[in-house]
Length: 312
Image (cartoon, rainbow, N blue to C red; front, side, top):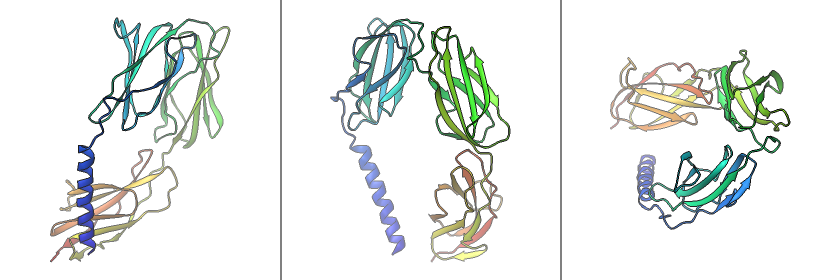
């Protein structure tokens, strides 16, 4: 009965997936309502949040910015596709047009176009420094990071501050917009912030957080099928134990082989918990598991266990 339920569930999943691929809503006639910057805006602020309303049944949005417009284009400044309805971007003083269209796997709407003029000013007070890397809430096992942020045309220098567990470990002034730095072997919570300066003004700080985790996940303990056992059901349930997590979030990878050399797994899967079900053919199998965390640290493999499948 359990095997029948699983087979039926797989069949239903395949049918639903196929239907979802076939019945994609046509959004060709949809209109993307642009919200900000408003049409024909003239501003001295070079850092703008381009913002629009979501469109029903759209999965992505294509945003383009050109100067001076899309008819007599001198330069395409930006062409990006994102899933969100906001995008922060720095511009130099000039005349621009920006446009957005909604997209899904099959269809795309028409572009909605707005005009924008950015005038020059030495005042940095209302500007924002856009931070690029490390990204917000990134988790990594690398002690070397490339700090990179957006350039402001009216800035002379930038102040970079790096903190570990809220304690400053670096405070430096730079004329460039990127620097690669290594920190001591000290995992934990980090943050970094940057502001821009010139002779008469400065921006507020833009700040992001990230986490360094250099600890490998602990070794997993296999439970079933037990080593050198004989299984008489083609639906095999693999179960193992994972020690408590001490660092960033983890998942497990299970490897199933048909030979003890472990060169080519017949099955490899990413598992969120400590159990995995697989339908296999009659033969000898070997299996093992290891943990991998969000930072990319790979734990040692569990012991290698074997079992023979001899289903009726």
